[in-house]
Image (cartoon, rainbow, N blue to C red; front, side, top):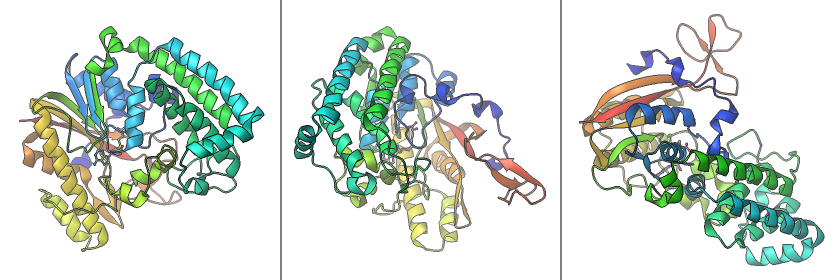
Amino acid sequence: MISHLNIDPSWSFNECSAKDTSYITHGYYTYPAKFIPQLVRRLIYEHSTETQVLADPFMGSGTTIVEGLINQRISIGVDINEIAFLVAQVKTTPLPSLKLVEVFTQLEKDLKKRLYTERTYFLQKSLDSLKLHEKIDYWFRPAQKESLAILLQRILEISDEPVRRFFLVAFAQILKSCSIWLQKSVKPTRDLSKKDYDVLQTFLQHAKKMVEKNNQFCKLLPQPFLENIENYRIIACTDAREMPCLTESVDLIITSPPYVTSYEYADLHQLPLYWLGYLEDLSQFRQKFIGSMYRKRENGSIHSTLAERVIKDLCNTKKSLEVQRYFADMYEVFKEMHRILKPRAKACIIIGNTSFKGIYIPNAEVFIEQMQNLGFSIFDIVKREIPSKMLPSTRDSKTGQFAKSNQENVILAYPTEYILIFKKL
Ligand SMILES: C[S@@+](CC[C@H](N)C(=O)[O-])C[C@H]1O[C@@H](n2cnc3c(N)ncnc32)[C@H](O)[C@@H]1O
């Protein structure tokens, strides 16, 4: 059983500070469940060589793609979430520094006028041209909403598309701070006593940081990549089962899939989705995400006896259907991974096990069974601790079960996850 594997401390990256993990464009946007870039880089070095093709079917904010590009790999990624696509696109597009500084300086000047001296006129103009979703009022106080509307309208007037997208990501990044979303929580929770952030200062501060980070990214990119990034990168907003890749064309996959019973990704991203106009109806939008409890689709086969047992233990509840759907979806993603990988190429899947209402859901073991059924062999399995800034949980040292900290034999435990490394036969 893989749960008895020893933790390999060299994969924890405990020594990496927040500054290290947000270096170059990795610091543009706070994306939930984002990879540690150093972990991805190590996998890239250990399992591929320069100029090979790297792919991530759940690219999220594009950590794999950024690391692939600066390490001279042709990089391909998709995600179903429009915000992930926007962020990944911006994080992997090197922009001329002078141009960015010029637009930034003009923005700062214009925004001071629009937000302060001529606020009434520009507010009306902005509200007339933006079609703001009604849910924005649920998350933003009126004055914050108005300032953000003026700011967004001005960004949308930037004529150069990649530069406009760059500042839209800066806008998206400050939304949580400028809303009444509980700052410490990734889950959608309102904090009615939250202090208002200054919209303009928060935006300018972050955008300025991004301008510097773009510079650092450009310096790390190999020259041919810098000159024509489109030759080395394919990213798309699409389903993981429709990778924009030819059959047997990819040398390495590095990915971390969504979880079942964990986050509702659509809900976590609702602030930028509402503001940038990607979201008309949240309940419909949720259904596209693998692992979502709102997903409605025919249940396919799961190709795992272990998963069948877990589903049986969940006793035909709504949750058992969700888990069944999740593993059926993941099997289809693995089939697509098998299609695009070259023979003997590797796939690295980073996944942790979860539990629901006392029933343990061994995602990693199920994935192993499914991958083996598809024609992959296990190359290596690494068990790693996930360093957390939050307090680690306490566990009984003998049983490994969660325990109260005042009990005997209690040890501190960080959550763990597995890096499953498969080889296509
Ligand atoms: C754990 S996150 C990946 C984070 C990423 N490694 C990063 O560093 O930002 C999982 C991702 O799967 C995406 N996802 C969920 N369902 C999907 C689907 N059907 N097709 C493609 N991506 C999907 C979610 O939008 C989310 O971004």
